[in-house]
Image (cartoon, rainbow, N blue to C red; front, side, top):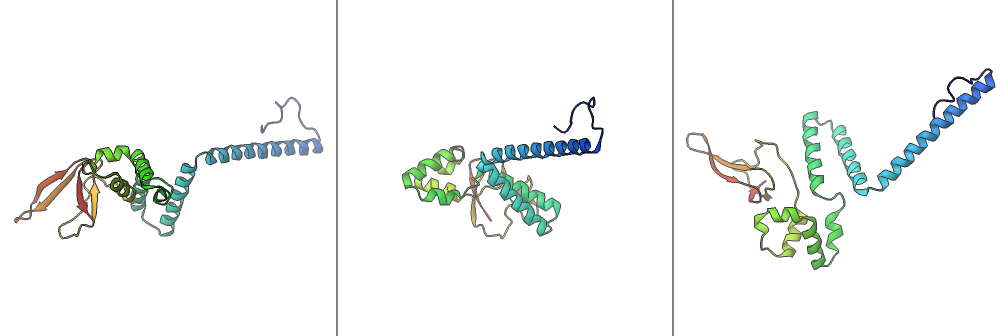
Length: 192
């Protein structure tokens, strides 16, 4: 679109050169407008993608504004992406709470079927309780070796482990770390 011919016919005077430049500019602008229109159409067909991108851009702007160190900003973005991969970008709780209890339970059971199946604690529980619990959950991920709770901390959350293994350790009288238990996938433990 940018070229005007193969060079076998070329402008020989100023008015022809001006026309050639004008034709190239019009072609470039038209091409840019078409690309922009296609981009808008693609974005509008995926409201989840648009909302996700908007939230991620907002997070990046916040981290930039606060001058958060790059390694911490990277961890925060990873945690955010994991969270958004497990939860809806839409105000799920607000949308679902207006539904009748039976429909809400059915919807949450369908939306979170894989997670509900993994958690042994939820087996045999009331569907209303399960749907309320699933809507309140906040997915997060931790790097291997990260300490979730230390001696003396007060646990104020229940963690349902969906993937991985958590070692429960304490220190003996000699100050040596001792493994006292493990929590596997689908099990729960208390944390901060």
